[in-house]
Amino acid sequence: MKPGIDRAVAATWVIALAMTVALLANVTYVQGFEGQELRDSSLNPRRLLDRNTVDRGPIVADGQRLAWSQLTSDGKTYQRHYADSEVFSPITGYFSPFAETGLENAENHFLDGSDGRLATTNLIDKLVGKHVPGGTVEATINVKAQKAAYAALQATGARRAAAVAIDARTGAILVMASTPSYDANDVSVLSGSKAQTAFDKLNSEPLKPLLNKATGEVYPPGSTFKTIVASSALNAGEGADSQVRAGRSYQAPGGGQPINNDAGDIGGQCDQNAIPLIDAYAQSCNTTFAYMGAESPGNAAVREQAAKFGFGDRIKIEGGASAAPSSFPPTGQPVLSALGSIGQGSTVATPLQMALVAAGVLNDGKIMKPYLVDKLRAADGSVVDQAHPGEMARPLTSDQASQMRDLMKAVVTKGTGKTLKNTSVLGGKTGTADVANASYNDRWFIGFGPRSDARYAIAVMTEKSGYGIESGPIAAKILDALGG
Image (cartoon, rainbow, N blue to C red):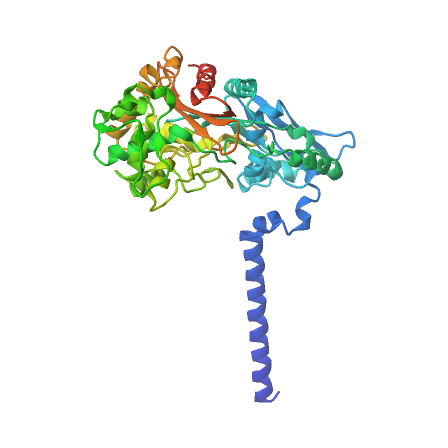
């Protein structure tokens, strides 16, 4: 060949080789690093093919199966089943022909056996052609307490209700109940048309039973938010015994409608010009906390403290699962900040968020990361992974947390929650939030117990006419079921 042709051929080979290497590198990257993401993409139609031919592992709690798969009569497909699904659907979620939610979604690849952590334990069985089911997910839920919570919420007749209980020392979620609920067996069927009919019916219901009320919806927290406002006052230098402003009515600078105490407080401590912070909290004086939010320590201080507790962020639970963000309004209008500081107006929170507020107070100022999975086991029963408790935030110093515990105990001994003083509830805070143009209130109670060795933090919300204290007995029943 001529020198010019030799050079051209060599260049062509170099380019071809470079392109081949680039192609191989791209294929390796896509398969090795993006393969799972591409398989899970909603744009991938193959994602939903053959999903019922996989023997998904069970979801269990306290040794009881909450969800499991069973081979059907055709010998090829598996039907997913759920026990007491209306009670446990906020935890398990569903596995339908179209999608999955709850732990079915958060641990989808472990349940279907495709998780990389199962590669070693499943390899030999796969090589010899042995049937290999998915892994087992052990939830943190206390079955007895979950059932007690659901039954108690149902018994109130509330239009919507939720309860969350957390082990404050670890972050383990022990109870996550929601009403109205649904039966995952209705949507976790093999027939797409049957599942769609069930979804259409559930989605047409105004109270959205598919939506977990404990994590997926936000509500005005009422006076339970005063826990955050009180802690911001401690952070600003006040103490539990500091004299704070009270009075029958408070007018924020700049005008707006005055904020008053509850009619039942007339003639009580809240009517006085100044009282100790612990008493203002125990008696839930609106005027005290409206003033704090509007003037001193003010909106920025309350907003900063709320953020330390988790407000403004989606709180991660498991995998891609997270709670809706709670919020306190950033505003330069004192009247709006005053309203928000008594848990009304634009202030909203999930029951999970408010349970974490109580947990931070109980756990010496530290909020542990909430989680729902205790252990992951391979099909042979070996533990592949387990929970590793970690700190989510530290909104309070040890001294501030101790003072806040005293404030919450005072609510039960002499304040708005004193009807609970002979129960397993050691400390708490009531909250009653008005709902615009509605005949019902959002009735809240957050607290902790049991009295002998307080380690559980609880939040209960029931939507019905009445007061927050009416959610208190539910918290007591949950604590009793947890061993309180």
